[in-house]
Image (cartoon, rainbow, N blue to C red; front, side, top):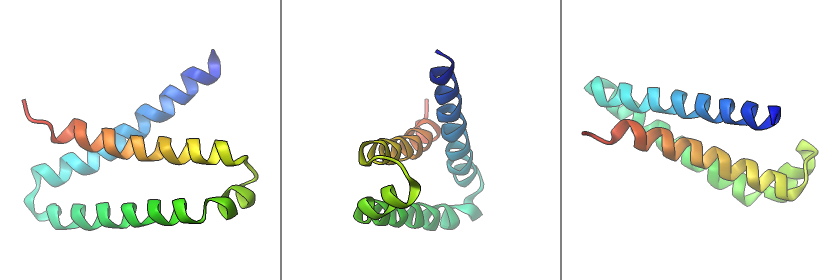
Length: 89
């Protein structure tokens, strides 16, 4: 149970940080260009992490399944953090 709570806390922290970048770009028009390039760089990093998955899982010392799970979790954090802040009520 303790590890589940810890994982949930890390997930919410990641969503909060990503949402902070997204909301800052939304509020301050000058940061919108930087937010676009931040999204481009993060997307390229995820693509590279997906292409070299066997190598990175071996270097990190985790199983392939754990690596893919971590990669999917990171992508979910970025997507949820961005979507939560961009939805207007």
